[in-house]
Length: 515
Figure 1 (spheres, rainbow, N blue to C red):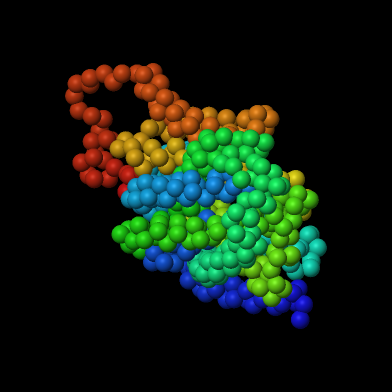
Figure 2 (spheres, one colour):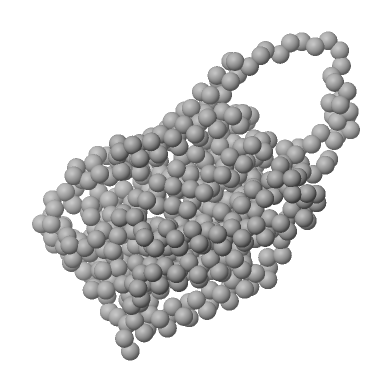
């Protein structure tokens, strides 16, 4: 039996199993809240595997090995140790406070709106979620490249299959489908990461021989930095920027919200250990980038390096299993993004208090029902957009994908950091100023041609966003009119609300509930 036939059989089994899990998730999805974040009843094992599988996507299994292929040990270092440190620090420092202030939040914009008591800020972050489209396209393209190399289909057919399968099962089951399938996908991905790592080490040979072979290709491949690279020219780009990116990565809407999946907050440390530990294991596949450079030389496109190496270095049966597992890795992040974006459309656009009032949605049941419908419609629309953009992909899809993803967490981190650590968070207007300044700097540096290193542009944007937010708050307070002493009683409505205990909370104001 040919390797292509084996791959198709395994892929069919995988798809069938995925849809069974999605159908189970669908049967448990009785409300929009269940669609968005599940029943808040998961243990650290399932939630941690879901987190780890979402962290590791096409970027880890397909795109990032291409950077290691092109730039050697500096890329391998930058994409592992400092990145791991940043992710663990972000989860451990931001996770407890995010969960503590989580209330009944179902999305990151919902959480921000609750924490800052601002419907406008909630809408601002809901609008920014469109930046996820960049990364969705990266995942679809990477998955399609693997299918082309290992399953004998044309690129347009591969793109269509990836979009149709993933978007369909998320449409069915929402977060439960995402969690159930990610748990299974994560287990398979661990096995495959270890297999690829083993074959890569065997292909490289003894460490001395591998270093000599890489140095013969390019002496900069075996250094700590790569002066001729646009990405790893100095220690700041190799160590500092990846740490900052890893820390801020946690603030993406589809990652930090997973802390709210847990049934018990005391499981948070185990959740972080399992999720982060899985991400470390998945990242072992990056070593295959070095093996590909030794075996293939310089005449392979960067984004296709891993797929080409798999076709040449690994036996047919094993290669078919790996190809399907890499597709699972891609789908595990793609479905997480889809759940996050569709939940934001439902909860923070259609069910936003201002929109819900205009639509005449008066009860919580009506808002939930409309939000669920809107979330599913959003999945269909995202599928069409992703397919249209992925059919003619950009030249370097890894950079294209990070422009939007990094921009999103540059804008999100100030709201999360000051909301988690501040006893009294700054005003919503100050957060918007900081987020907008950081996002503008990140996009301006990239599209202005200063550098194509999105890690560097995002780090600069993060520094500005975190500095500009408290500065804007200080200016706001300095310009605010000073309160004057008022002799006598407070206004009657305030006194009545306070004395009766009916003063609405931020949560009540945002949900449209009457006290």
